[in-house]
Figure (cartoon, rainbow, N blue to C red):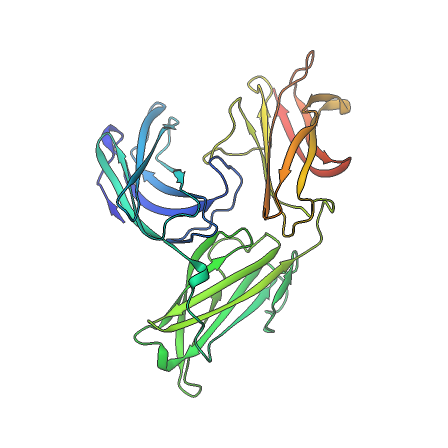
Length: 379
């Protein structure tokens, strides 16, 4: 990453710039898995995340950032977003991105982000075709293991892991030493059931007796996978060494008709749909709150429930009074969708208002519960 020393009058320095694949233009609840390589078969939105540090801001400050995506054919797509920093902050993380053509053209891309004509940073990423991956090296293996807090480490190789049955997942990669070249470890790529890829590295050692390069470590650097379905791991070392295999994460759906299970959800205050930088909460001020947004992400590992259906959400408050209600809303699910995103705005009904107390938001599909989130309102 190439970085400028400061950003305009803010006096900000960029300390980190990286990329992640997103399911949509605005999605406040997804798990970000970072990478510099993305599969053209599944890539939709590719976003740039950058972290800034700066002297303490005395008053709320706004500034704009333009990120330019240079494609392999040298064409350019630009996205400009205005950012706001609250008073008292000394650092912040921001993201913005583009949806490329489907599929994205293969090759190397460069992204540079600018403020007031000054380049903040520049970094590359690659779009590749996973269907054209080289054949695995004979004699190479991947083995997967799960560990759970409070129990002895699980040393038995598994190919499937139940949700709730593990805290962390590990992989052991081995490959004949003759193909390792000058490498002493593996560069690996994890692809989840939604087709989102993220990179991680494994540090290895040579076992002279077995004439193998062996490495063991966590599958990725973030939270363990939470989507049910098939995950692919590919690890490379040197110019010729490639090992690849799959493991499954399974579990019962919370909503059988959709084969859906809640991955993550959040409540956000405001009239506008929350973006990538919105922060969810469970406590809000009744005096300041005008509307709530519910954003939820569900996994959907099969084609069950594909087609048109509807959902409805309602907010209940003290004494179980109905404060807000969405009424029936369309929910479109394609057979190829491996995730379902629900976004719903909730505002008080006529003659209702927000008041201090305990509340909950609940949503149903076909009369069956889909999710329920509690929250509190203070004065």
